[in-house]
Image (cartoon, rainbow, N blue to C red; front, side):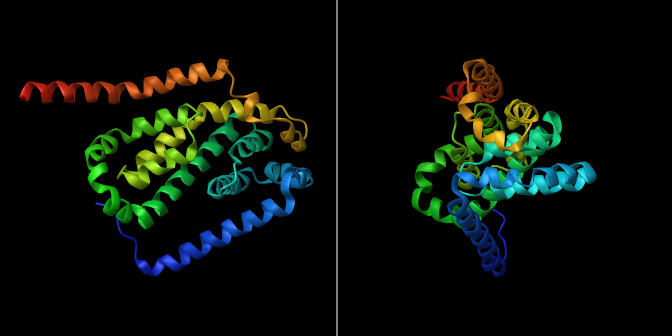
Length: 241
């Protein structure tokens, strides 16, 4: 069963989300490629704020990541770098993963609320044969996809929209799956002397075979329990024939 949310909240939620996305779109077009330099202009204030109130700064950063990843603009890499610059590699990686996990749940929750019924009315007969498998193994599937960063995030975010994967599994799988990559990127951010140097780095500086191969191995390990579970189910099904 998909929990229903009172429809009276729909205008407020959609209005706030639309306002945020509209503001983010305006900022992207207004500042363009200079947005990083614009933020870097407040570097001293940001660093001082983190030093003065680290707990409050951490909460604000998690909220920025949570809502920032809802926008249609790819900014996850820059956010992870910034987290490492402001908080250091270990703390920045954890905060970034927390925000990303919360964003995944928020996107999945809103998407499921708005589109689940419509999707299953249209394609329910085709999805029914996969529903139990994906719902049962959703944690492992999402964990493996998050560990291996080649899989587009928007595809992973669609899984809990289409299939009734528990949101606690979505949150935990996203958090754990992003920790390794977040730590690597945050370590790069920690080594920057100026926030403006973020512009000189790109995902291609990180996504190299030396990183992707170990992450692929971890992704395969994450899928191993599901593979064993499916193999046992097929054996039992054959034994009943």
